[in-house]
Length: 405
Image 1 (cartoon, rainbow, N blue to C red):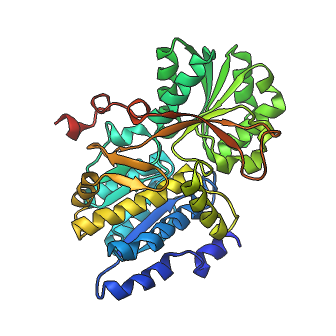
Image 2 (image 1 turned 90 degrees about the vertical axis):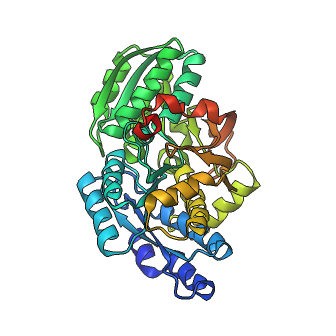
């Protein structure tokens, strides 16, 4: 089943979930969640329909128990801030959407948060990356759940530099997300005693990386840091393998995850280290969720960290809604979410900080060799746990205006 048929057929869980909640909430308007992401381009496999599946799973599991009827809709922002902002405005003004979620592509996320600020509607970012969302451009209506460029860049930059990769060169996607990811990693490299030799910036959705890879190859760097994601990361890593770069230089893929590997093959990423908040094969709880997710995904994919973030943040949203009783005031709904400790089977116990940052463990993983892998989707091994105090930017370093106030 392809994405279009999946979205139009009712195979998604949202409609069935709403029907099942009517019995305990007669006359209540369901909480309407708009999932806004990339359904057709570079990030479609990263989030796409998988984000709706995960959110609908959370609603199916918890809506009746918490007494909060809910439903989801989804739209494609096409990685364009103006389109994302236009959809968000229409959803809020005309379509009765109460909360907007996911938002891969940081430029789109920033544009949507700006619209939601005007309308005082809650926004939860699982796919959004830039740490500016809890820094200079923080908002009282926003929660940043799964990861950010600070946690990925600092954790991985420090680990690889400490292991001997002292000289870095970056290949970076040329918009807010990539630049922020590069800067956060570069800061950690320098703090750990390394140096940054330069960077090559590429447009979003690039097919040919040869010129960027040649710059990296000739730079003399020990480590090539890929500050890009989705299809761009796949293309750059594939072509790096064809160029034989890994024979002389280490590869640091700052946002590689399980959904990249089927298109790449393990041989292209053997030994690459990553940082993530979730891996499907960590424990019984993550494996159970992953099998359920895979069973209904149109491509039978396993969930990545951002899909897990959609499940966990939707669950916590329902908890907040059970306390707030209304989504009309987005800031009050987010305050209710912040007041409740987070606890779910995928991220465990955590909290939402005053600046909107969800705090939870992060994990350093290493891609297995083809010989180590026991089969399909067995791609990574967990090396260590990064404690929240080490994973996330300190509150007083973020520059969030209302935290300063």
